[in-house]
Image (cartoon, rainbow, N blue to C red; front, side, top):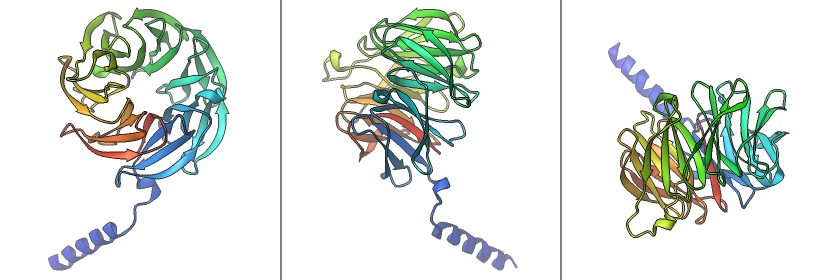
Length: 326
């Protein structure tokens, strides 16, 4: 009887391995290509592009609904946020987004989308179910970065020209605070369980860390890449590991990603990637990190444990945004 049981288990395992993965099982990284008006879909298992999908003009920010049933796309030059069915690649409809949407963030309620409108100096709030604008909030000049706190209390907009971080109360849809950062803030993320807000400053060359409760700056991280002129060290997108102890920071035209200790705020090392690294996304277990390299038109795959680039994947022209579809 034990022998039969072992044979059965072995046969079952062999059958499972022999069967092709279904589309639902395939883990993917979706990349927006702003100069090609396309999205490149990378299969995480093979590290190859398996689909190329047409979008509106100049796609930049992309994000999935929390259930991954639809993809939201900032089609900046089409002045639209497009809603795509990721199974078919078809655009289902557009959302009223305001002019020149660049980045956005989806509230934890999976319903309210906060959109930075670069040309209008506003943040537009859209109800994705009713497809109507809920609010338009005046912020600084050239808003770009967007974030939302894990508890959904705050939405954040960064304004590139005003050099500010704007704190929006998501219940009242009103500004409750403005905090100064260094020149040309690009990206924002909440960390440390939502108790910290990190904001990158592209031209300032720094990354500021704020205490969420007091809104006071608690740390400022600076970068220095050996052999690279300081003007080319420009922090933009960044992501945290699952335990939030480490941040990977894209440093733009320096062509490096910085590895930052998120507890001590010290830079531990730098990883060479493609040209003009911009944004990034992890795979599901956060063992791999995928960076968008705009000028070289490719994606670098980083082994997170080894802190080393392991592969380059060619995508479209000027890859910009990245999003995981598990």
